[in-house]
Image 1: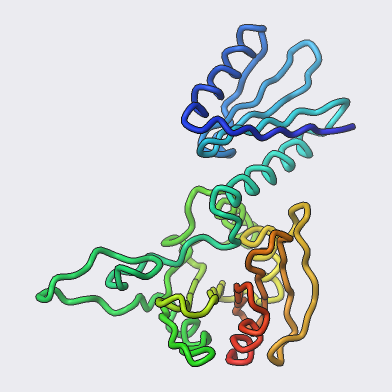
Image 2 (image 1 turned 180 degrees about the vertical axis):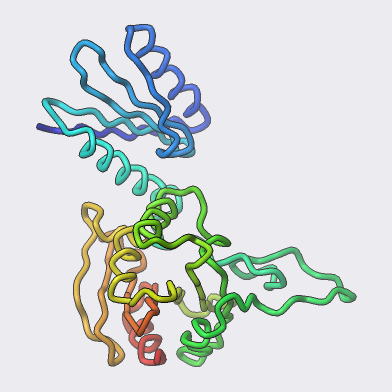
Length: 278
């Protein structure tokens, strides 16, 4: 059995293209069912004569189509469609593994996650202290560059993109909620060095259990073409996740209940950052 996948770029006509596909299927007497779990809009086609199913969804200007040839378990088709949805999300985001840094009130306007500039009479809030202990695990300086640091809960940063939904599903399997997930980040506001650090903690859950969930969902470690390998850097045993596109790699290290991700295109910078971790 085979599943064929096609992704087409419709640009501003993507919504109309998806609607035309649905109208054509319904005109042919096929049953269509909404799939809100895929992309910004999606549906499945059920051919009542052969009981086969195809899936369409739209994300931005891209429309994806997945259909089986032969007998394919619906769960397998769903898993393939979900993997394509995650890959499309990443493609539209420029191929970088994690999403943008946490939006923190009071951050400088020229930095990631910036808020509008405050007037001279306004009091600028301190960075979020949702997870101070986790935040303290991230270095304040790497390679002579001072890093901005802040923290939040999963409820603050997880959205409706495929990677976020997959991570929420993993949390649910642990009996946890996004509100219980703690997240901290460190980054160079001046972009002098290519470095982004992200730390996750689910209190009561060891890093050995949380790390696979972070790698498989947030970092797409199980997606086709993604390479994951054990390496030793900066005195730590690390899982390196590479995407084969010349972009940033992610280096994942476990520490107690914390899972720390170091993202950079420069392995020497990754080594320095990992050496600065506890």
